[in-house]
Amino acid sequence: MKHRKMVLSNLMKNSIAAYFGAVEIHNKPNISYRYETTTLLLMNSWELILKAYIRKRIKKQSIYTRDGHTISLDKALNYVEAHINSQEPKSFSAVKENLCLIEEYRNNIVHYYNENLEPYIFMLVAKAALNYVEFVKKIF
Image (cartoon, one colour):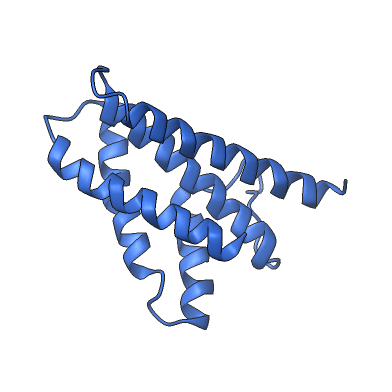
């Protein structure tokens, strides 16, 4: 398998695995750190699938930085939004806004902690999960 296709395949496979991990954790009501773990896994699944999209559809953009690391979630979101919205104006803007709101929560999880935001984050995560399924079905 060519390197480009292997990377695309692995990004998709890991993205889907992270998504199902998020759903599985979310569906366990009596687990501590539930929304935090769900959020981390869901954002990871989105980051990987966005990089897969770039690999598949935006061939002029690289998912790698000059130092060999991969681009940030923010950069991947900007590339995908610009590409999709150039074909269907504003069709990805709401998805991006949802993910940016969740990213703020995610950053607090990783670097600090959050006060009890379960109802707020639940709504955002639920919409991001639905958006993910629609995105994967449409693109892949």
